[in-house]
Image 1 (cartoon, rainbow, N blue to C red):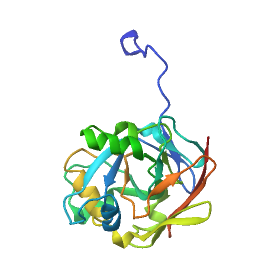
Image 2 (tube, rainbow, N blue to C red; image 1 turned 60 degrees about the vertical axis):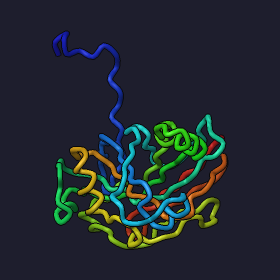
Image 3 (cartoon, rainbow, N blue to C red; image 1 turned 120 degrees about the vertical axis):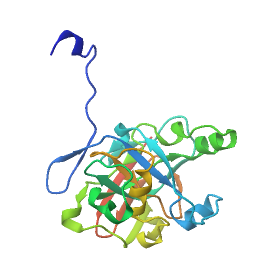
Length: 231
């Protein structure tokens, strides 16, 4: 490497997620779909009509493979949001919905941890959500399961429990925008690439978490995830 191309500090490690069957999936970007289940839209005070989905992002290094997740600082109201996560396996732009599933390498179950108090304050002032959504370890994720093993799930139970008490329970069929449509719509705004993850929205029942809570999340036929919040 020539001196002009030499990094002047140590290069950061590439975030990666284990894959069922072996290997790791390198994470490039994380996109999230807001309010993609009608009942969740209602509980957040929005109209669930089928308007185009909106997107926000988390940094790639917010992924954590279950286990122990620290309760974040600067919040008194941390919420859980269980989601089907789409792992993109090849690049594309302006992808037609009828071919969009060809771009999905696989799927996982994830939890979009949210500092709800910070989000509410940001909404009130018309400010960005970054500190509410993109904090350290805010994206617990199961192993990614290749579509070659399970196909492309279009239905099936999606659930989350806290200390064995079920808090969220829905079905993938309840998504306002299905997986193919989400991929197609997002690709209108940004070029998707191998390594991208898309959190596809959460069903109703989001609620608070406390240090010491054990969280279990699952998407039937895809994967299970478990983590414990530490103080």
